[in-house]
Image 1 (cartoon, helix red, strand yellow):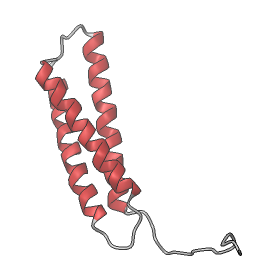
Image 2 (spheres, rainbow, N blue to C red; image 1 turned 180 degrees about the vertical axis):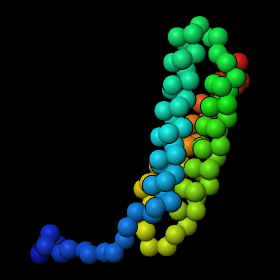
Image 3 (cartoon, one colour; image 1 turned 90 degrees about the vertical axis):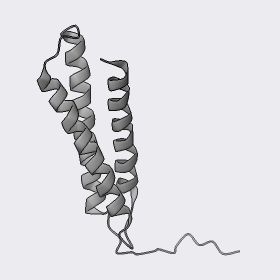
Image 4 (cartoon, rainbow, N blue to C red; image 1 turned 135 degrees about the vertical axis):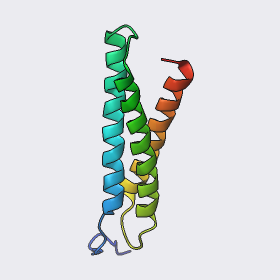
Length: 105
């Protein structure tokens, strides 16, 4: 039996730019949420309205990241790793924000 070890597959596929942007929005949102949690802990829970505005912006970024990731996933003949990563990570960010609001922190 002859093995197929010497066959190469060349492709023109690239990662979707929308998927990469979705992942970047997820990273920014997660970093801001971690900053908010740490600052709330350092201040003993005494936070100002500015922190609430930052949390709202994180919610907007995460929602936009999910939409952009879905748009990137629908592009034909592309790699979708960053699209899926951005979608999942933004959903996790939204769940974190929801948990913080539910707990009343």
